[in-house]
Length: 117
Image 1 (cartoon, one colour):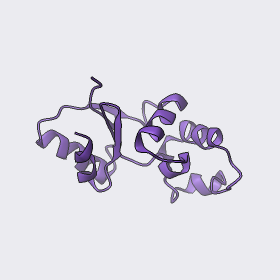
Image 2 (cartoon, helix red, strand yellow):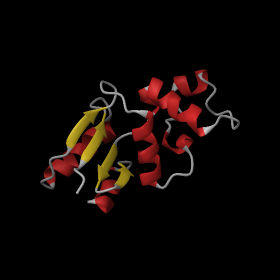
Image 3 (cartoon, helix red, strand yellow):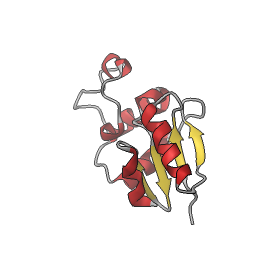
Image 4 (cartoon, helix red, strand yellow):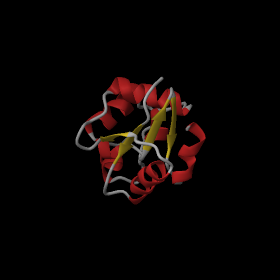
């Protein structure tokens, strides 16, 4: 059985709310502050699959300046390039992400993670 894990940014209100929601329900997730402990390309690929996304772009924060600066909206960019952009610039990763037993959910809204518990 996989452990419950949250990819967390303590400066993000949705991330804080999601963590609080888990804790209020008695869960003690492993907290990964992904801005301090970057996620590997391999982990991101697995997360994208667990979320059921068809493209890494679905996991990206398109409103970030670095998204525009790196021209990541270019439809010709391949998946490896998009994933590497998130590895190199972790703030591009949508948050929070909760993993549980091979499943993943993004806490937007926070209650969305309840489906995988």
